[in-house]
Image (cartoon, rainbow, N blue to C red; front, side, top):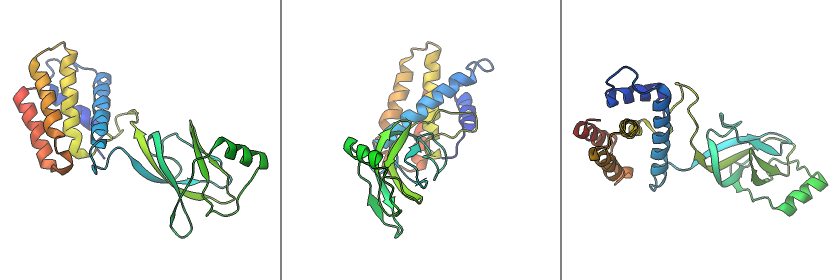
Length: 230
């Protein structure tokens, strides 16, 4: 996942064949790429074993900490993506084993807060509760603990031209082609060929995507571009 916004936007400008310099603003093309990137990611997430739609990351819950911020960043001090929903959380104990963490109920929270309980061992799995903008963990421990979080991510808005697309490089041609179609629609073009181009992308690119080679994806995108002259 290394294609930057700048690289993708440059490719998109070539595809849309601008009749005047900067016919589309960088801001508009960035919006189109953002939308296309995330729509592609969501579609990939619906394909079994495609490796999209959920992430697994290890984080560190500091000693005596009861909350973990959901502000995206770098592991192990943060999750790398915005969190849409938690699938499950495990404690990675001193033996390297995954021990499931249960969900924190209201009565549990009341007990831990009123007794001010703290466990000494890092091998005691905490209970958790999603309480945006953080995850609540109780009871705290006197040592740092490693937690393995499985979650469904949300797209992260592009911060600048160095931001990277959420999809792998193999799918960038699709992202740019989809964005190019919508860029043409910006001009008020109602050519049915644009709808046909989009349908071809939807039908062929995702028909058997989990088993298609990168070369196959590239050929489909090239055929759409050549046939419909985006």
